[in-house]
Image (cartoon, rainbow, N blue to C red):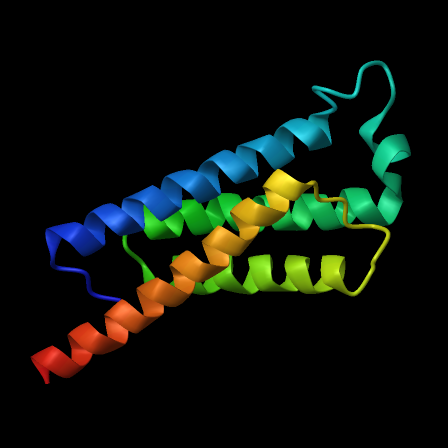
Length: 127
């Protein structure tokens, strides 16, 4: 993606910040910051802990990719978020998302889709 306009670059950075904050919130859950004395592995289960770790790392790497305006950042963020939402919506007991987290993930998917549409339109204008 080649975002030369100021508006598209700002939108990309805002999406990167949202992805970074969501990734850091997931990292805090992995470390057991809000869980009290109970281990996060006990709370989430082994499979849930593993899923959360993978999605957390994917979001953090995607945030960096979006910040440097690399196309792989949007692909990684969109793919990881879509897989996580698909697992949650199919009823996987290992994925635990509250209502606000679900809404943020839907906003991220919509934002990545908007980035792809903007990228395609900009490509058509330049060609």
